Image (cartoon, rainbow, N blue to C red):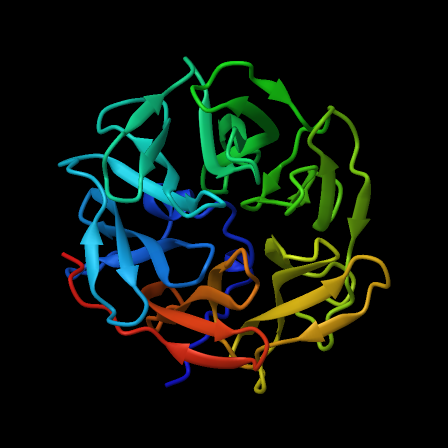
Length: 336
């Protein structure tokens, strides 16, 4: 069944997946999946399952749909899971209940060997392990609030950093101070990161940065989306490097088939050398959290159903076979 679209423009870019658990969507009694990751071979999907005030990471076997808890935490918010390139570890964000700052957590995929690190007075989100497994790349918010008296507070003042696995040797990768930013992806050769950024006075763009030094982006893209939701400023999110390092999968918003049906957030691929754009899905409705396996064969994302007010209420996991473009809903058991 096609997910109901969410017509509100403000829902176009929901920043980092972690924010869903803190300031985002309405809840339902059975809980909801709000962020995802996928193993390098595409056989396991990791999700953050949010119920009540808490959110925990589960691993889902793609073949059976069975879900198992990663940790034994009993409170707080776990979010934004990402697999290591060898598939043996998961890195994610954890917000302890009652704490004013987030932590970065690294664990083996069987839940053992858990290590936390938490720099004081910072909020770090959406961690990703580099291709050699020795570096964590992440976003850091410098301000939580609102630039307008009528707007909802959100995390702003984004910059991107890298560190060693224990949180030491932190180095800044971006010079700009972004109003908002998407989750990031690291190139297969470990030399670059890609992220969607937006400034207070600059539109959204796909930006690529070097990992070996701080500076301006080495490449920026603003693909022209056919029948785009905003013809002048495309609505972009969730960029992912493909295995060849020469193309990126991402999500972008286009107008639905009917004026009242809202936007479709579909999956696109852009060639970094030629700018050639391909559309891989159609009619997703409101969709988020695109992640692609390291082998480039499988992508996973969330489709959302909305209430009569257009508020996202329930999410469903979908798998995209990238070569064939076949889309399949992943039925899950064991989330509780």
